[in-house]
Structures are given as C-alpha cells and as structure tokens.
Length: 294
Ligand SMILES: C[S@@+](CC[C@H](N)C(=O)[O-])C[C@H]1O[C@@H](n2cnc3c(N)ncnc32)[C@H](O)[C@@H]1O
Image (tube, rainbow, N blue to C red; front, side, top):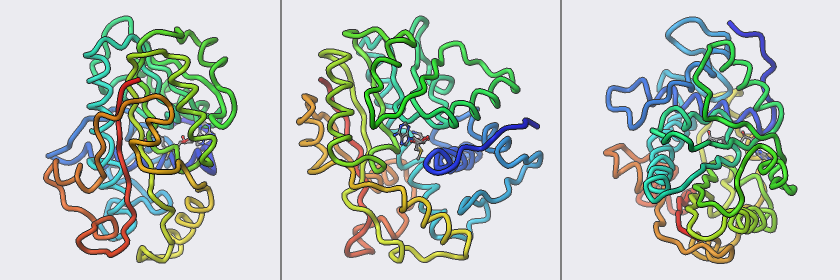
C-alpha cells in the first residue's frame, strides 16, 4: 500500500473517472482495458480487496442513479471515443500525443503507442504527485509518459516545450473532462494555443457540455452523493460557447466527427442512463464529443 496525498478539488475528480474505468475494465464486455485505473483507485482508497470501497459517489453496487450515469458516461460513453481518436492520429503519422488534464489517464499503456512517440500528460502538481508516486511504487511501465505540471488556464506551452514537446510537429491532442472547468475565453485560448504550437495536420478530440446540469435534475441517494455533486458542480465554469463544430472552427480545426455520449453508448450496445437520454428527459444533460484536424 502506498502512502500518498490525494489531490483535492478538481484534481479529485480524476479519481472518479479512474474509478469508473476500473469498473468498466472488470466487465466481461469491457470496451477497453485500463491497467492503471484500479491500481490508482486502490491506492487512493487503500483497498486491498476485490471490492472497492466508495469514493464520494463512486460505488460498485449498482445502487446509485448518479454513479450509474457517471460510470456509463466516463466508461463506454467517452473513453473509447478518445482512444479511437488517438489511434486515428497515430495512424495518420502523429509524432507525439498530448493529454490535456490527464488526471489518472492510462492511455500511454493502454494504446499501442509506436516506438519513439511520447505521451505528454499535462495536469496540476497534486495530481501528478499522487499518480507518480503510485506508479513508481507499482514499478509501472512509464517509459513513454512525460508528466508536465501546468495550469491550463495560464500559458502552459513553455512547460510543455521544456518537457520535450516538439513544436510544429503533427500531434494528437485530447481534451477530455476539462472544458467544463474553464470559462469560455480560456477554452478558446487553450485550443488556439494547441493549434498554434503543433502546426497543421494535428488531430484534436474534445468533450464538452451544452449547459451546466441542475443538481436536482439527478436523484441523489444520500449525503455522500449530495456532497460530491455540490463539489463537482461548484467547480464548473461555463465552458466553450456555441456548438462543437464552431468551437473547433474558431481555433482553426476542421470538425470531422461530432457525436454525443448517448450515441456512443448505443454504438457499444450499452443502455443510456435516463438523465442523459433525450427520449426520457425533456431537457437532458447533453455531452458532446468532437474531433477534427488542424
Ligand atoms: C474529470 S478529471 C479528467 C481527467 C482525465 N482527462 C480523465 O478523463 O480521466 C479533470 C482533470 O482536469 C484537471 N484540471 C482541471 N482544471 C485544470 C487546470 N486549470 N489546469 C490543469 N489541469 C486541470 C484536474 O486536475 C483533473 O485531473
């Protein structure tokens, strides 16, 4: 068991997505493997057993509308889309990958990243400190992983270049689980800066909400869930303005694919939680996934 300090605030949300991925990879019909997710979650919870204790709203007993929605959304609803986009970028010749707001992301080991391609993971210091320490204690293969500490609301490009990123070279960028924590101008700036530093022919995959959900639009099971949803929604900013294609277009990216989490769940033969299903809820939370090339 590793002695570590858990990230808090927005950094803590990265443990929730890792928890969802840990549950997804335990399914017989898992849509992806994630060798790091349960390692990181177990370390966070100091959990030696098969069954994971709760983490905020996270649980593995199927007894929570909120968590069932999160696990579908973060698991089959979102992760394979980004995996596919990284593969497409690498197939098209990308020489480097940048995972913005990487959290506990395990793509660097999950995907078959070619020799010589490095995966830059940009996130805050407490998130990297926790992840570095757990991966080191487990002697995990981190050869291609390059952690970069930066605040993505500021100018983060110098830190990326200092870490070995090569400006002007074709790159795959993922922006998963981040834009809801940024105001509109910071979201636009982030994408423009990424386009500018990597040059034409780079691939970008992004996720964002149409609107911030109302806390009472989701039935909550208990005080733990109420606390979690208050924490999560309290961190939300407005995110990007406009539809996904215009958000990408403002940064000079030609949109190739625009989809939504329910469509991705259906594509994988998974049920769609009612709170994000247009057929069940008149004004559901809509979560877009979009990708394109600069
Ligand atoms: C919901 S988690 C998503 C993590 C990862 N992309 C995933 O899908 O598992 C949100 C992540 O965004 C990071 N984050 C939020 N605001 C940030 C900022 N201004 N600068 C750097 N990282 C930020 C948090 O530290 C956290 O790791």
